[in-house]
Image (cartoon, rainbow, N blue to C red; front, side, top):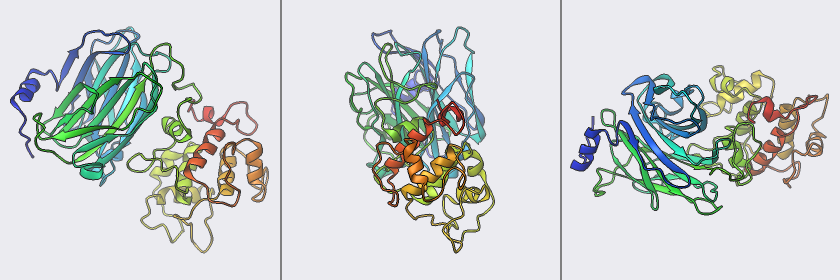
Length: 433
């Protein structure tokens, strides 16, 4: 195991438990304020237990769970009452070399347990922290969220970049960083540390930093830096994940919570990401200005049909000859098995071929329960979708390739449209809102 040489002050802090394990209490402040924090490591286990930090009823708890193996550690089962905000995986090499991070929230009740247990799909090395806040809207506490992952100099020699999200006046911006190496993590400019913790036996570090917001505006990218020690003299490079969330102050407008349709300050892609219907590329980027590919639509359609987990885990190959080793092979094979697609002919699916607006119309209609050759035909599918309002605010002609950003708009409209013969929207059927 590689050992980092930390400063005497940092070692003392670790020994005293002020920054690594246990609970820290802060003075109560005006506006949104952090009251207590607690952190924990699990060594290598299927669970991570973070101690209760004296949570008071009605206060907001935010949890950061950082773990090895990335997507292989999923799904994560959260403690009762906790709701997922965002999950981000670095996805650098996969498996043991990957790192992932999930954020959760809970409004504390009157009788909280002595500790909170997160359960992984297999044994993993993990560490995490919980911060307790007051002054947050209890009904829709999370105003916005975003994240990405990377390695070393993908954004700068020792930079961990949390991508910008929408802010709100009086809100609290919190940036969370996970690092797959024993290192001191320096808070981004203009932000102060909420907690920092390490797993010295397995070489992991986490950091949470915060800043009060004064206006409705994008928060801007926030960059933490990784160093050998707190003297900030020698940089360290490794896999990382970085996320931002904005807490909505009590009494403010906007914000999203399960049961609320849409967030005014988010565009369609950001909204879908908040609803867990899209994830973006391995670094969390939505790439809204690039054309949607046919393979990507199969992933999206699986989500719109509520069948993503089955498609992800599908083990049988398709009959298409052009998808060997493709990252979306399981989704395409599952789609073929379900009769969702028959490809382009000649045993070709066209994994990297751009998707056209008419094709998008067909799949969105199918997601709403409409049947091909019964409720619509190939020739009139686009007109049918437009009549339902699915292509509102989208100007792409029927036969043209559709941008990812435009497809995201179509998806939002589809989710907010009643399924065929039903009185509730598709998004409600999928338990998205």
